[in-house]
Image (cartoon, rainbow, N blue to C red):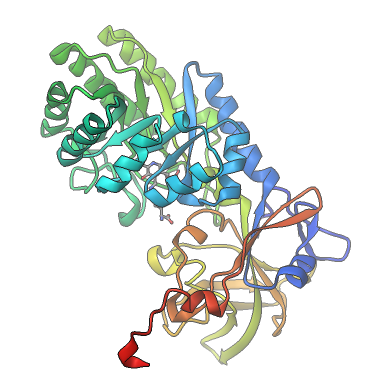
Length: 436
Ligand code: LLP
């Protein structure tokens, strides 16, 4: 397993994160346990912020869908980034920690009237309008509230990114945004003149997630700038903001080669500037909204090894006390992860095993064919790069409670998410009188 962030192997031969021995974490908080490396999270924010600051007028916002908790929203606030929310729940979390509302972007392809009202009443900075229905609804709510709302339009630019089918979003056949190639996007801009409460600020697009090729982003910037010019020509509207989404790939597994933020800036910013000059339009402020690149590498999950099953000549399964409930990504996308035994971090690999979860489903496998020291019940398995879209997509399948999450840094560990209890699982159950 590649050691990321502040991970190291300590004198006791244990995996340490944020200056804390992971075995001490296990003793104090139990397993499964999500561990968030504070310094890695903050450094990822800072590196992005610095790279973009050097590129001129720009802004980095954290896509909170990757991991949204009150603590992570506070870290983002402290690092001075903006925040992308996609639901009333994420917005509520941000508001609960007094996140500066002017730096909040509200996304979503089907915002409910209640969610839109919540955003407008709380004076969210930008609403990313996804479709004609929303445009009408938002304008009506703004009029009722006597407010004007800055908006950007979500555009589906018709670009195929090389990533998993379920996480690519820029192609024409997509549920998101106004389609560019068929003229729908231009129609949307023109229709804005019917909606006086909506202040046109700019455009948004997001071509997909876990992307490594800079050409995909550069091409997107070219396509979007051509549209910026067309908008200026046909409507006179000036695009002051161009949000190019998130999607920067991270290291999960051998062969993943993340591109540093500076390389993104170097690949994309010149396209924006050159096109602006070519078309004679002002250079818009460039906004990016990575989620995974900030929180993914900062997360590690600790599990306790339990049962095993050896099928001689075929494979050895070992099972851990979590699985697809706390990390549905392998089952959903076939995602690959790396792992190590946190309590035998110094020992050489001795056997190849596959790691199963405890859900009642054959598809609940976390890792295939991983080389580890001899595995015994009670060992602590650490899986790296689980910060993004693990807690965020976790579930209670088989009524397994969700793990706790701790924030580690400078030798200190603090709980940021309590472990669910069995009582939490039945808290919302209602037994009607006739069943009692
Ligand atoms: N902006 C928009 C509009 C998005 O739809 C997304 C991700 C992001 C930003 C952040 O993308 P990131 O930088 O994190 O790649 N559950 C999937 C990922 C779904 C991504 C959805 N949208 C996974 O586990 O891989």
